Image (cartoon, rainbow, N blue to C red; front, top):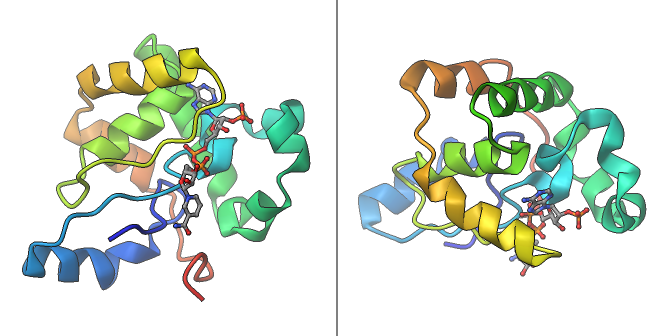
Length: 144
Ligand SMILES: NC(=O)c1ccc[n+]([C@@H]2O[C@H](COP(=O)([O-])OP(=O)(O)OC[C@H]3O[C@@H](n4cnc5c(N)ncnc54)[C@H](OP(=O)(O)O)[C@@H]3O)[C@@H](O)[C@H]2O)c1
């Protein structure tokens, strides 16, 4: 299953991920970094060429609900772990039992190297819960 799943879009947890687990279907989510929004501070989303021009990112519900607070918690945990925000967001996804491998978007070799290094980041159960806690249901997105 190639689906839309990240810290800011977790509607897949309702039905699709349990179904995939039950039927032993592999899961490879796209936009694991919310198209870059989970890779840098909220106010810097449009600081890159893609962020500035990616209208599709703005059609997703990343800015709805408590998206900003989740973005800030990712930044805080990145500081504490001496990691980048992208690595914390990827590490959270890699800790999900249902996920086999995220389809990461990269625009530099450094992004790719950071993504690989995220495999070595271990998040405690309380860190994971803390990242998840502000999430509120958002509009269905990516599978209309
Ligand atoms: N099946 C579908 O419907 C579907 C839909 C969407 C995407 N996809 C596939 O999924 C792939 C990934 O999607 P995506 O590009 O949206 O993934 P993503 O991983 O959520 O976002 C990638 C963006 O995050 C930023 N980034 C990545 N690593 C970073 C790092 N280490 N530090 C700082 N910023 C970092 C970059 O933003 P900047 O470029 O702004 O720096 C990059 O363009 C696509 O290429 C596509 O093949 C499939």
